[in-house]
Image 1 (cartoon, helix red, strand yellow):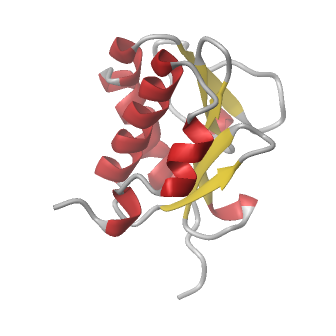
Image 2 (cartoon, one colour):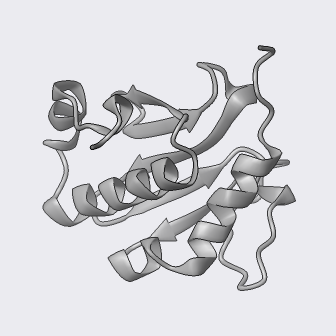
Length: 130
């Protein structure tokens, strides 16, 4: 049985309605991957920014990754992307810390390289004080 946080809420469904079916499917595949690797992730929906955020608290410091939805693709973003292993050279971006991977196909979203990046991001993301 799916955990409550993994069910598709009305809010999530409403957010995804504005995007093409292929883009929705990419976002949901990445969402499933995040919850598979880190079932305790907190999901936040940022409608104006067109993104889904996953982390341990509602702060940037505790953010594992974001899924930004665009017209024909999604970006999987990592706030500490410069610290992630990237043997395939998939990460893009020029900021001091953040990097992203442009995802245009389900095969990419389901690749071992993407799973490894999400796992590495989970491993280095600080947890809020318990």
